[in-house]
Length: 182
Image (tube, rainbow, N blue to C red):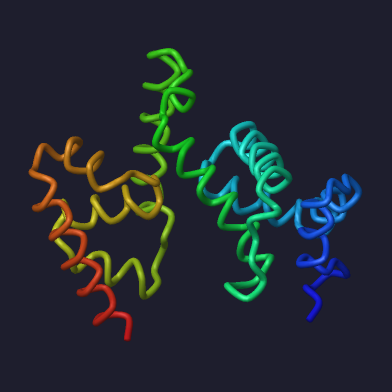
């Protein structure tokens, strides 16, 4: 069975295992933009995403002989290699913190401002009305998470509450919103 987009991924991987460099190019041509999209969503930085895709392609080239068609799809195998590379970059973390303190503070301030402005710009609609039924700290935590992009740990630190309290507050707030909006 052939993979989508005109590239038989299984055959391309077998060709890579035999040392056919054009097969790696076929994989990149067929899946490169999707690989970069996945990596960008995971890493939230284009430069790191490009690095992850490049590293993944090297691993695909080196390990193509290890792919077993009977154990899963070739496309899934390729994306699993990329996912693992992205997770390693996230775990490493050293390359993620290359901004100076002032720039980082500006970014944090911008994220908090965006979350605050989201409330002001919602206007008279069901979501705003339902958010208005929440207590202020739950509403603020939800906006920080879903508009500002903060993690639960970051929100807990900003609100000076334990992580479990923060998670519970967000979960209960989302349940209330679901009930209100349905």
